Amino acid sequence: MKELVIDDTIRQDPELLAAVEHATRLLEQEIGPSEASVSANWELFAVDQRIPTVRVKISDWTGSAMVHFQRSMLPKMADSALRLAFVRLWGDLLQVRSHKQSEKLKLLVQGLEDA
Image (tube, rainbow, N blue to C red; front, top):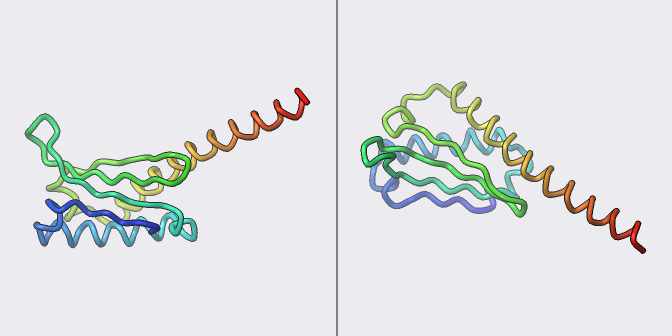
């Protein structure tokens, strides 16, 4: 990862920290060679003040994408389920990247046509 941030509340929970570190390795594998240009940020928060939730947000120069996991489920998730979530997450960021690059290309072509 270009940058990896793990929230202090996660770091204080050994079981959750181990699950996040394992999940991060799987995420890096799914992203592949591009992982050097992608940052990841793991946070723990409560939805509706009731359901502890872990969120991982990945980002690059074009934008970001995120996925949520129930805190109680993350340490128990099978690698295959995590990989599927990360394939979707990476696809979401690639879609943001594609839109950003398409917009830049459109502006470049428009500038050439106006010249």
